Figure 1 (cartoon, one colour):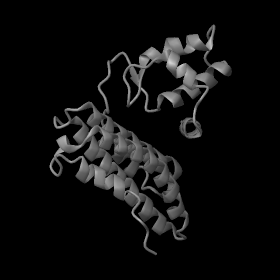
Figure 2 (figure 1 turned 30 degrees about the horizontal axis):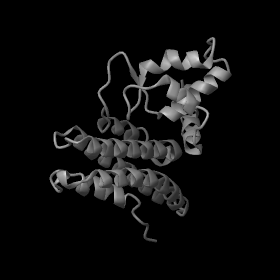
Figure 3 (figure 1 turned 180 degrees about the vertical axis):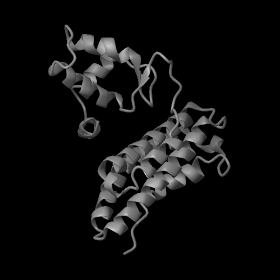
Figure 4 (figure 1 turned 60 degrees about the vertical axis):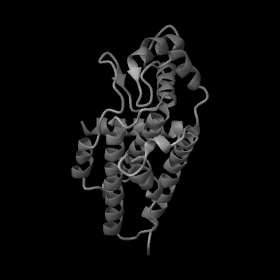
Length: 226
């Protein structure tokens, strides 16, 4: 059975649309940039859903390993390409930087998804360790800050739960955020507002809850391996 290549749109955007050797990036308008960012968000959810369907449509473990391995390698390749583009001197406009940053976050989330859901079908530890050669800092951040790979909404959920369960003890939840947040940065933002993050802890979307839970589950699994 022939399977649809789910990364077709991402592949095209990274290797053609945003490739300075293939496209005159000056021709990409802010409106087009916003459309790409919105599409990237849609594709992140679509790919995760459809990839799971593809995996479970196969009955032989060898077939699943090939499918998962191929997608994992492709995601690493695309992440490497867009990271190089993000660092290039071709991106002079803020809207293009926003596009490349959004795509990096999209690809990184998909890679984490494959690692967490289908690790048993990867050539562990080779393929996951190999990922380190593709990973690069998305932003420059002061040495006094810790780069957290979660979004502000996801961090907010974890800090809120830590406060309510008295894992982090302070005179108030506001104090917890005020003390910790200034020392954090995310892949998309260097300077975080503790007040804004605290408010997001109460209006988080279901997808942010899922990612926060998946992250904690991966931490639990790692601790069990110690």
